Structure formats: C-alpha cells, structure tokens
Length: 247
Image (cartoon, rainbow, N blue to C red; front, side, top):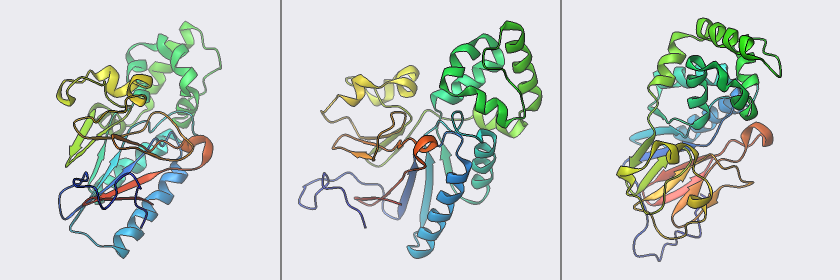
C-alpha cells in the first residue's frame, strides 16, 4: 500500500472519505482507450482483492483529443456506468467539442489542443488548415455522426464533485474564493494561480489538467494528470478512509 509522506500517521487530522467507501479517481485520458481498458482491469482486480461496501470511480475530464480514439473512450465510459458507479466530470476539451458543434470557427483554436484526432475517431477527414467552409461542413458532419449517447454524456457532465475532505475538479480552483462560488472558467482552465498556492483550501483538491511526470501529492492538492496520451501512464488515485494510494 502506497501512502503519501505528506499525510503522516502522526498528523492530528488527516483528510478522509466516509467509512465504507473507496474512491478511484483517474486523470486525463485524452483518447487513450487502450489505457482505459487496462485501468478498468486494474480497478476490477483491486476490488476483487480488497472488497468494499461501495466504490465510486471518478474521472476528471479531458476524455478526448490528442490520443487516437476519443470516440472509443466515450463509448467505454458510457458502458462502464452501466455496471459500476461512475462519475465523469467536465474538462476543457469537452467544452471545445460541444462549442464546435454550434460555432465551427473555433476549430482553428481547438485544433491546437488535438481536435483533429477526435474528428478522425468519428470517421471524419479534416484537413490540417481547414477554412471557414470546411469548418462548417465538419461541424455539420460531426453533428450527424456523433451518437446520441455521446451527446447526452457531454451535456450532463458536472464541473465538480465533493466527497468527505476532498473536492474533485478538472483544472483546479481560484485561491481565495469559496468552493461553492468558483467560476466555471477557473474550474476548467486555471493553472498558475492555483498550482502556486501553498495555503490550505477548504478541502484537498484532486485535479488533472496540468501534466506532470509523476502524481503530485501536496497538503492542499493532488494532481493526477501524468500525460497519458504521450507517456502511456494513466494515473488512478484511490482514497479509502484516511489512506491514499495509486493503482
């Protein structure tokens, strides 16, 4: 069992989740359906080896773009929810996909974030520098092609999840603002102001969005985006009682 040195057994109060519950939190998947398949297997094996009354699998957003099979990732997450208790949060990349369907002109900016691989995963054939007419045509074709289940999935993604002493979100939170009054833009996009903040938040923030070589476990936050699309490392954090570890 891996335990963070930042949460020592001698600490008078350690962050915890409710008794009888285990959280599995997973960072940015970015189109790596192959890694997601492997992760589901690891979670199932862990549950078999360490049965618990209730397990919740939390995914921190950015399911699409960059990697080769964004559509496959959404398919897998939707199917997983049929047999396991899951909670998928919204990431900034999902926002871009939804906006593209209404505003094709954003493809120029979205392409910098890996949009072309997402369009390819739905069977579209975008050019590298699509002009306005092609942008509109691609948005119309994607609107016809994307399954209704994917549309519902994207429309229903919440921005955050609170459990015990932990607050789960895609990017982070704005220091100084109560968790209940955070701006959507910060929850989806914030980096430097959040990452540089060393004082406690109301809860320990579990986040993705900013890739690091290894998970970052700090007293006020835990970052679990390890750049899966490029590194092949899809990180899953588990929380049970006041213990934490990684699969």
